[in-house]
Amino acid sequence: MQGPSFRNLTFMLFIAFLVWSSSFESCIARRGKHWRQSRATSASLAKKKGKSHNSGHHHHNGGSQPKAPPSHKAPVSPPSKPGENIPPSPPQKGNNGGHSMIFNVLHFGAKGDGSTDDTKAFQAAWAAACKVEASIMIVPAEYEFLVGPISFSGPYCKANIVFQLDGTIIAPTNFNAWGKGLFQWLEFTKLIGITVQGKGIIDGRGSGWWQDSQYEDPIDDEAKLIIPLNKTIEINPPMPISTELGRGMPSIKPTALRFYGSFNVTVTGITIQNSPQCHLKFDNCKGVLVHDMTVSSPGDSPNTDGIHLQNSKDVLIHSTTVGCGDDCVSIQTGCSNVYIHNVNCGPGHGISIGSLGKDDTKACVSNITVRDVNMHNTMNGVRIKTWQGGSGSVQGVLFSNIQVSEVQLPIVIDQYYCDKRKCQNQTSAVSLSGITYEKIRGTYTVKPVHFACSDSLPCLDVSLNTIELKPLQEHYHMYDPFCWKTFGELRTPTVPPVNCLQIGKPPNNRPQSDGDLCQA
Image (cartoon, rainbow, N blue to C red):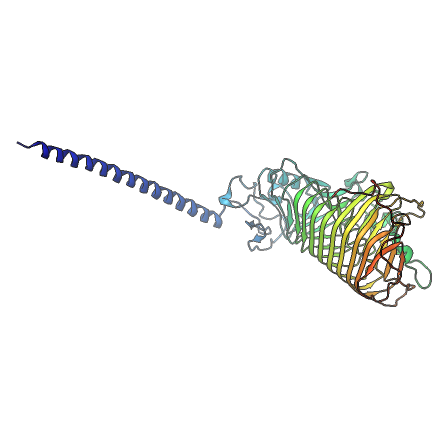
């Protein structure tokens, strides 16, 4: 017969065994859960790897297949003929193994033969891409798409859409496509994180517009300063190309590519050429990046600004080449925190702030930097132009390290700007202050410096540092530097001497009125 002590010992061992068993099962359960997760993860990775080789989408041989990040593209082979082997249906929606969803315009009925109207196909592709965050709408290489006026619109589209342009988009030259005239051709509105990128071309085919409007559009007012030696103004002959049906185009000319009311906009890689008017415009945008792109139009194409900014903030433009018939870059009212560098400009009218204050309006521009720019064979170099009668201010501007070659007027401030035959003299003006020019070097053909400031509101704090401009006699009258109501300082001697700049402040300097002030 067992004693109480033995029974107690047996009971204690039994309890210990139960505790140990429970702990062991718990450990096994945790390990089992971990193993199940590992197996599920492995299966998921295997599935993703499989999709990276065969995502289930059909791509035409002439298209591109960017992956995340969108700028990486798989190698492709050119199609044997536009329109061959087009898949019967658009890509299926879904996560696509972690990659961005791709919407190729060919899947939505686009032909890309240069003559079929592909506008509806582009609209359908955008409608699908709009619903998917970080989607990619592809305009494939080796195709030429005829597209009429179109708006790729938000505000209900998902963010971070990529418009991958590797082919060519051409504008219609039939006047019927434009109605009574439109202000833009391709437009992106009210979007967040929109990117237009690729190696493709946007061709506005604007010669028909230029021919019709060549003698109607106002000429750049700085032309009044450029007098040929024989005292005759050069007039270019009409361009021979007309519209398809021989009729004139509407008087309102469209911008080729416009962004409106958008945040974090990027344009890179593409070429925009032969726009009827402005090539690339940003209006009411915040956070703009333009780089490694090209604008190309003849130097005598009227009013074809390269890049046009208005009411836009936090703008960076760099590593870009612009040749056109007007300002390479135009900075209008409402712009601040604009940084432009490493840009090649020419032909064209240089880089301009303005014109500002037209029709007695208020203009506000601040914190503008233009540096490391090459200009060749342009009308102006760096310029600020305002109308009499305006109000507001331009302040905090730096032009630095500008290389000019055969530029007619390298440095210009014109507060009497007028692109009409006659403008009324007015006392109010857009005030200018804190304008710095440094390291402006090269050759000029008319006048090195032209400062024409307001009688009632002189230019203040204009500084010149390391200005070296040498005349290159061609067929224009040559002029010495000119200054009117311009106050500031010469930080170093200039070539040629700019003795007309008045040092310090004007004796009767009045404070700015409420109309002159702009909120920061």
